[in-house]
Image (cartoon, rainbow, N blue to C red; front, side, top):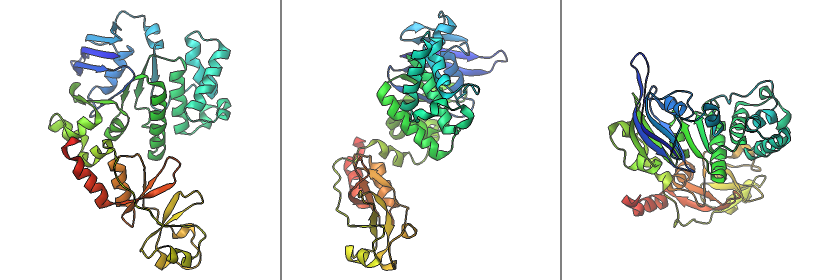
Length: 364
């Protein structure tokens, strides 16, 4: 647990960066700090490992005040991940990752063994261990940065906009990988981001800060979306919060309709025999949906060029938001629902999801 008790940071020129901050980051959970520029997010984060000293108040790790701790020992207890990873350019990936374990007194052989395990755990091939940072993409470097922070097996982690320096596709992949990793390791984490969608996706709880470092609301992502504390929080979370809140409502109970499919390479006549509907799903040999085609418009054999790729797929155990998006994005308005292996389970229509939303009602 990391606790802030009436923490304030005032600079010599009178600027108040953080003002009487009280919050608790629970053990084993991820707490995300969000807010407009200049609201004290990064200052709050850096006060935990005393890169910045509080002007007043108390920060504690599992009830023990950080003020009297030896700074070097304090920082060894805390993993730290920053933008652009901050890797040592002259060291290989394995030596970068092993460095924090070595600082904690781990033998070189053991530290490298830990590093190799973590390299694979964050989703990188073992062969990357001998590469240098300049030989990696931005997303790969961020994975190495996370692995390095974990190598000393810290009790706590601080993450300062760790995924902001990569493109949106890689960012989404890193977020999913990090969620998987956090489910396995269960660290106590405080993370800073400027992206409210990232905060809602990753956080067990989200702290919204106002300009001047005042806490506006501390709540779960679902609570922020369905019960913002005031107009500031409501505006910051965004106008489409009603739609986004569906991401926290499970789509259980929805019934999926069977859907005919056809394979790539099939003939136009095969497609027209498969359905009388305007749209038809093309699936691969493992029954994973590839896209939609219009049988009436086909000639010859079905190729990649014939596919309409606008539709998304929702996992069978997914949220109402995923289900609704799948239905709305499909040209047929029948959303594909897939199992854990990506195989087509069936489809659902927009009105099926809306009926589920309606029956969920205020219980959300």
